[in-house]
Image (cartoon, rainbow over all chains, first blue to last red):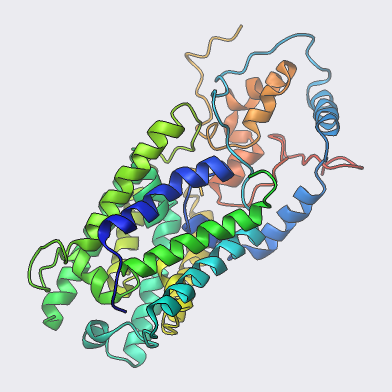
Length: 203
Length: 147
Length: 73
């Protein structure tokens, strides 16, 4: 599709997402974790049921917590027991997103693609373009490459606990060591593979 | 903001991400390939061939500024280096170079109507499922649960 | 008071949604004293996170899930 946005518009559009996501949802912006919910369906629905049975009011929650504390420790401590690590000031983490929200996110991403295509006014075609066709054809090899490549992406992002958004964008912006290392690794690997493909195919 | 259900807010973020990725050209295999080869096969590095890279770096810079201004004291989850960080990153990059997509890009491609991306998405889900089974079996631990 | 300098602290305190709740009442610090500061590897939430399993919002470190009308498992 032609008529792409200039780099700075994209930089703005992408760059505001991590902080906005944190301010609104109190979660770290990333995609691979959310997609990962979709492969643990049974477990995620069990968690949904657990969360639905949670106490609705603060008093109920505290009462249940007190009861559980007594059950575990025998009694409620008479005074303060200081937390070993201070609860950070400022905003605390929000509740983990469940499978329904994860599904909504993924579907909405596809929706963004759809709207973008409608805006562009023409369809990109079912495949990945001419360069991809020269590299992998449009038959079984091409499909196999996509599935296998996809599996590498899925496995890799699971092992690394993050993807281009989670590590490359959010984690790097926070200078998180795991994200910086993961980003360096995936950039290096992607560059290496791309160079290889380019040379072998004569792009 | 509090009145908006979480699921609506979450969907809004997903929509914007998908829209921007597509409008930038991240869903075009050739564009991604050009980014990863620094324009080598497209006439050399230039503002036009490095467009995606510039967008990405700019996004990181803006995100960094955003956190510094609005979330300085907040407990945003950490992402530490752990056992799967390097290997995971390498495998991910390998797959990305082949498919032209990361998990989000593949989904957006599907939304655009690139039906072949269904194969990528299927692959991603299979890979995630497999990796979870294998790491559980091997006892490889996750570094965090940030997403 | 606790001397925390020698104790390893759970690395997930910044991404655990239960941890801030323990600060609601100062007496709830016993949980953190036992788990977060001490035996965090036996915390059910930590184990679930390590194994990439889903974590109920109100899963306590001892494995119990807080639920209305009937308590946890």
